[in-house]
Length: 304
Image (cartoon, one colour):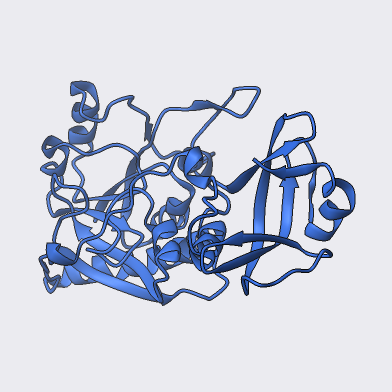
């Protein structure tokens, strides 16, 4: 089949590589987001999907808006049998959905209808889900509301982080797509309507979502610390003796009883328990163990 891939994020790279290496299917082009400035120095960088295509000779299109007439004309000219979308970052209009001869498929990193939206990986960890997976879905104009073709499931480990689950799902995605393609070619691919009564939503995360609310239950805070690694990152604000504030990033923590009181440990009370911080990074300093942090800063910094 002639396949057009539309995606931007790192999670889609294994799918892209599978399409590049496939002897049965032809990758006829890729649509991704424009290059953009990143970091403090605002250096222009290509999105991960474009970077993965370096030297491959596959046509790459980077429209600012995929619904523009120019972008639509470019996609139509490719005459794809199937469009595959994963982590693109723009909503596809009906005009794009109607272009492929067979189907426009989205690979979504959750077991739909659970965790529709932009941050399903983090949501699965925060909500304490025991499993997640890749849903291969026929796209419609709604937010992850299309009929499901198939789902591939994986278990979520007790110590799972957003980073580790992202990588595992990224490697699961091409397996799911390979099976979906086989079913499409055999004419056996189902269309399973989603039960919207069981839908949950995982909106896009902003940096401020990572700020720890110590009035929340300790277990919820601990799950957010894992889920938000690496983005948006969990943090709290500390105040020094002059009243100045500094951000403390929290990379690892564990739940302990509320009555815990050990001056050699970095303990912070929360609802229904407390958190023992284990790995942190003070703004302007290197990442370090909580023990190292206590030796250098305990007497001078307090929660804001």
